[in-house]
Image (tube, rainbow, N blue to C red; front, side):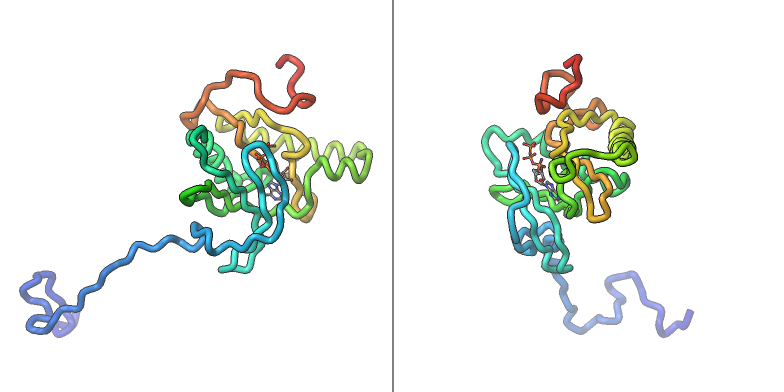
Length: 206
Ligand SMILES: Nc1ncnc2c1ncn2[C@@H]1O[C@H](COP(=O)(O)OP(=O)(O)OP(=O)(O)O)[C@@H](O)[C@H]1O
């Protein structure tokens, strides 16, 4: 190495000796995707018992996202929130689960910024079409099965699967959503007990 360019690690022998040293302060900044100010609300996509879901624009990338907004209340179960956020992160790997781009909280809200499923819900499709051909039944069943199989690999049970929680992307592929009632024996959450879910969609033995 060129001797002139070699720098000493010793503070006494720095090349800046005798000169005023520049001081840099590293400010802690919030990553843009975790800042609620970078999302512009457009319209309501849906509302459930846990919060509302808004179509929003992530202004940094001018990208449409679905923002699930859950108001923090005294009775908010933070373990369930962490669980839902953890499952939404699995969607980055499995194409049949809705994926989260970011999960964060503000003083009053828990926020999940999720991919926007443009195709609506399976419920809306059934209402529109009235019936499915056997090929369509096979298609939707297979994609739902693969999503659930992926969850099962992690010991996760959805527990609230109904046609309103099965979303479709713009190409018509299944995106399973709403993991607010999911449970697992592996991510340190609640055990499989209690009766939850939508009546009409529960397994007969429940
Ligand atoms: N990623 C998304 N893209 C498009 N629409 C969505 C998305 N996520 C949710 N929605 C819409 O919002 C509705 C409610 O969402 P979600 O089921 O997650 O809320 P919830 O408060 O947990 O509801 P529930 O009471 O059914 O548990 C869905 O049925 C769907 O119509």
